[in-house]
Length: 136
Image (cartoon, rainbow, N blue to C red):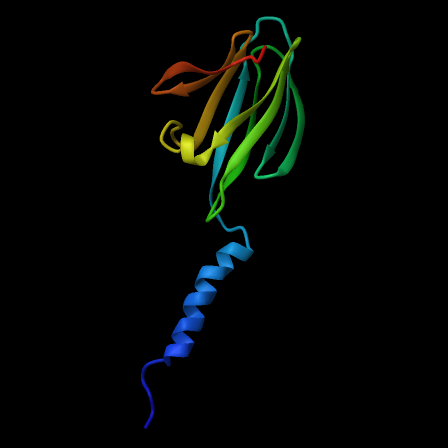
């Protein structure tokens, strides 16, 4: 007699593989854009950013210029983009995307940050909201 249904062992194997494959490989759900704008009137802003541990390099932003980079949002892993940011003698390391925190605060597939001498501001509901004052 031919069985029309897979054996219980085969079903268990399929379920196990389904659970383990995302753990073994980083699977990207979609990409999220991070925009950083230098709102300083006269100082160059330097950023050195990484997304999910991958170094995306150092950028120097003149006043009123911006930088954009993409962070892949991953399945079953914490998605984070962090930057070392320097403005004159001000410096700090900041999470510019933490998917668990920012998925409802950022809109249209992007987080928009403005940086000036007071700190880092995130655009939330069309308003600049101070998220990170500069460390002392």
